[in-house]
Length: 81
Image (tube, rainbow, N blue to C red; front, side, top):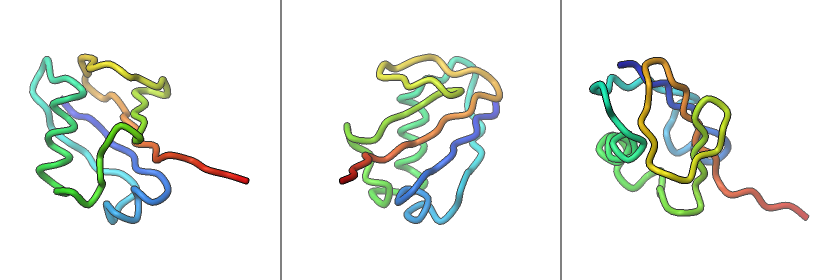
């Protein structure tokens, strides 16, 4: 199944792209996708608990099952002042 990953802010710079496509096996989960991201980018994205994942526009905190053509956004922590 095809999963589109979108990067924002500093994550876009670290990935060197605004978005990438991954081919995943049916039944793949968000954790499976995280492992693929680490395989592709190593520690460059610095995936940790401060990175928020959104699937099809909804923030997810659990390891959910992904579906064909899902869009997964990686959102870095935001600060302001």
